[in-house]
Length: 164
Picture 1 (cartoon, rainbow, N blue to C red):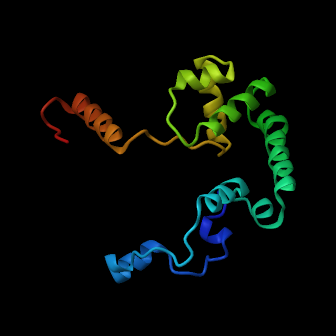
Picture 2 (tube, rainbow, N blue to C red; picture 1 turned 90 degrees about the vertical axis):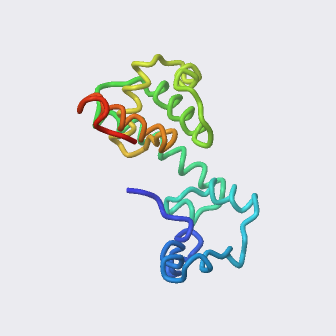
């Protein structure tokens, strides 16, 4: 399950999506919204999250408690239901490090070090969080993914048969 979109959180789900407007109206349909968001508005949206209950119905303090309870339940109840026993403190620490670093690019070794775990443990935790739909890994750049795919094809099919 994924959280709500910003359109849904802001009560605008019934409006025509941006992509549909551009497809139907061409580039001129790509206009800025009438009520532009400030930096503070963006921060408020981020902190509210996208789960319906905390983002739509709770003040900030209650929302923080809700998210803390969500993480606690995930670490203490959900993880043991789908994986061999794990150290809950290290899991919580690694999840926190991942959350803090979502807006930037950090070397994996930096993440492991900050969480106090080694590479093997980090890989196991990443796989676990992916299975639980808590973590989505995104390639660093489409160019790198294309290069990897082309290199792999060239190696498997014989050099010179594939060009990218």
